[in-house]
Amino acid sequence: MGQPPISSPQSLAIMSTKPSSGALLVLTASVLWGTTGTAQTFAPAGVSPLAVGSVRMVFGGIALVLLVLIRGGWRDGPRWPVLPTLLATAGVAGYQLFFFAGVARTGVAVGTIVGIGSSPILAGLLTWLVWRQWPGRNWFVATVLAIAGCALLILAGSSSVHVDVLGMFLAMGAGLAYAIFTIAGKILLADRPPHVVTGVVFGLGALFLLPLWWRLDMSWLIEPRGLLVGLHLGVVTMAVAYLVFTMGLKRVSAATAVSLTLAEPLTAGLLGIFVVGEQLGPTAWLGIGLLFAGLIVLTRQSD
Image (cartoon, rainbow, N blue to C red; front, side, top):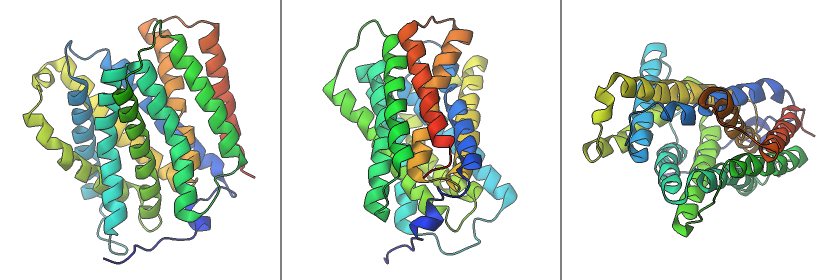
């Protein structure tokens, strides 16, 4: 199997022209992802986090495959490169398993900050390794601000922090899986429209996780409330969000895109205040301010 064609960094990481529209698309996807935690609070009691992740992947994959079948175009263009396609698929499927398993062991606070916070760092390093391109000063400054804000926002709402070594490695695995998906997806998007890339990658990811349905308790989907939660997680936070994300990924660098997704915990925190009724102290509000500052830096034209 030959090496898949990789375009130049200038064609793949369009940072210096018009990143604003791409950044807004990625931010929109991040806001949709931020509703995941709130939606889960409406799920029936006792639902396994692994089952939630599997349902999210399968429902989202089905929706995206249907979109490709309706719009067509998956046979157009050059032959699909095997390695980037498999890496992107493994990334989206692996993220569901690593993240929910990590959070189950180490808790939401540590699991989320390690998983989400490690993604932009790993994506920036992978960008340098693959294309020998430093993501830029804006990426570095914004990532530092956003990770600090994410830490303050999440840890401020936790009265105690339990550190589980295996759980932290699982959460870091989720961050690495997401970074791999973004890098591989960037390669696939060079010659293909976003809806085709998401349809193929997430359709394959759904096939990988579908066997879990025979090993997990999925009876909660029979309840109307459970089915609505599953549809929201799969269609809105997976299919729609990732379709919008790949549209933005076509316009910005992989490192910038992953850093922008740090808006997810910001959205989750605000929903916790206004929907779930949680209270945030001064530390959490400082974290929100740092997140906003990081996002403003990333939406500016990169130098």
